[in-house]
Image (cartoon, rainbow, N blue to C red; front, side, top):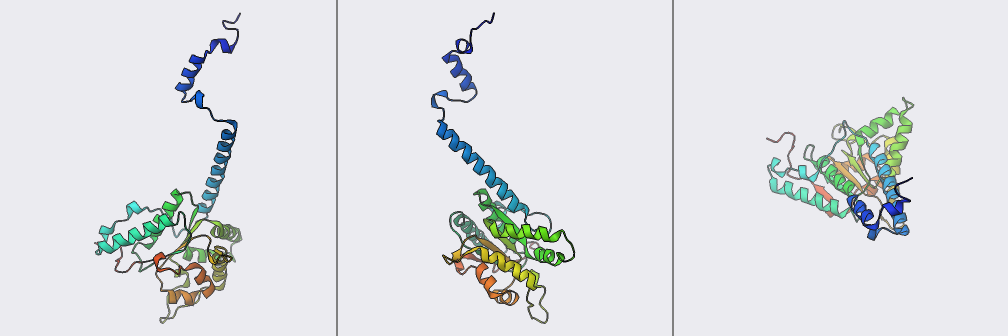
Length: 263
């Protein structure tokens, strides 16, 4: 014969409360059925978003190994003009915060080695922590992939996934924009190959809301090139869709030295 006739006689209310408390459950304030359904839906939504964000990031095109940089790693003291370096870091941080709720493109322009890519990555890091999907694309490496698609059958499907991600991702970073045009010859800038131009135009076109005549998905650009050189490399329509009009959204690395060679 069982010691207890049923479970209810064994687990008295006081005992149940103590057991629930030990498990961190407040049985006096249990969620309703509707609340549980909302929690389940929200968890499913977050899971789907995380999967999407991972897909976009995994389509990134790196010039080598994947890179990561945060604003905490920005060291103005490495520059001879520490004050300007601090102001540049602050401007990038402010834009990163604004991009969490606003939509616009950002341009980081200056000489090589001055930290443009680093601060671009720091902006991506802040937006990723805010739940935005992010993607990094080295335009030189992308151009190389586009040229290889004619010789290697597995490259074209890869490019299709990359283009899809570049069109859809919340925030896209185009690194070293213009290097895909090659070196100047006799101080003359050559146009970027047509297939690369067509690729970038399709991406830039989708990231604009033409009905509202404004940016729909932010694009961050780092470049060593003056805009007049970029205008010679690319169709003006693509450039106008990518480059921010407002000076507030342009970070100029004037007076900055090559951080990799600073004493």
